[in-house]
Length: 153
Image 1 (cartoon, rainbow, N blue to C red):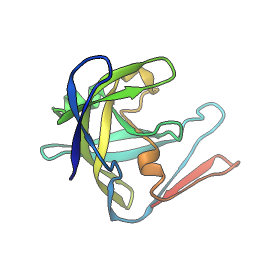
Image 2 (cartoon, rainbow, N blue to C red; image 1 turned 180 degrees about the vertical axis):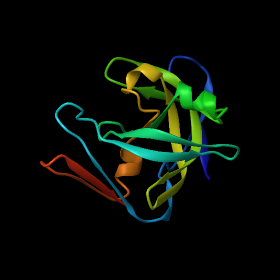
Image 3 (tube, rainbow, N blue to C red; image 1 turned 120 degrees about the vertical axis):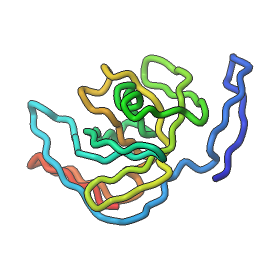
Image 4 (tube, rainbow, N blue to C red; image 1 turned 90 degrees about the vertical axis):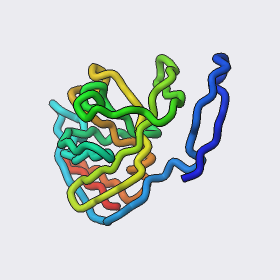
């Protein structure tokens, strides 16, 4: 894996960033779910693994997120330690965040080297993981008017 050092703007601190943030697909498959007008968020079950721990969690598929994010709750439960720092932002703010490398299993889909950053528990409606476009764009993502969605990688 190739990493570059860069200076975080305005801080003088160095951090390591991966030149290519695309996860590795270990096995292809699909996962489906449903949403409705009372709960319009696309949530799926996912197994999150690190070198030392494995945990079942709820993940939200978020086409507005460029990257994946892990909650403080799940990060602490799995006793994860960041291997680098990088900047993460939303519409309100840009913050320095720990960077983690995880493996994900969603149905038949298995991914490794998924670069994931931190987020506060209160931000994503009970999900412990946000799956962003760095994963969704690996395959086909279909959302239908009948309230179903499907991710195929």
